[in-house]
Length: 178
Image (cartoon, rainbow, N blue to C red):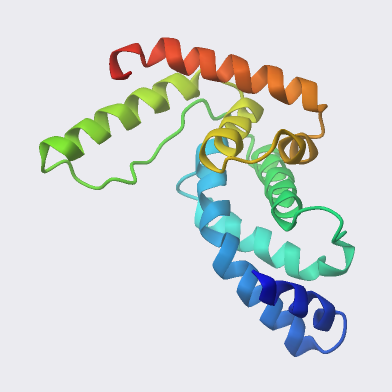
């Protein structure tokens, strides 16, 4: 990722450097944004399209990025706001987290993964949209409390409390798996 620092400097000038920077950002973060959208908002069918729109917004708003903060924080914030706008436009109420990234269960191991995935999905589907997003960033991305607080616009203490409550809930719901 040290190449990104050089590209940030050059991105302020010619268009080709901005494109090179966004190519690197796309490779590094696109899949993460897709998963974030799928897990947090239950929009697995639209996740690819929404992630592309998020990346375009990032490209267009590159000048507004404040390099004092993590790039991922900025991108997840754009993704969060874009999904909220999308849901408002569509008036969609999502209550489930869908999608299986493990493929068909043709072995015992795959069947176990599928069952665990379903159990986690059921557990998280009872949470609100923000809590699913917090769970994704904290448990899958291993993001810091500070970064999560910045993405969701809340205090670090609130994030800590929510992450703790989510862990307790998952631990209780997934007792048979632990």
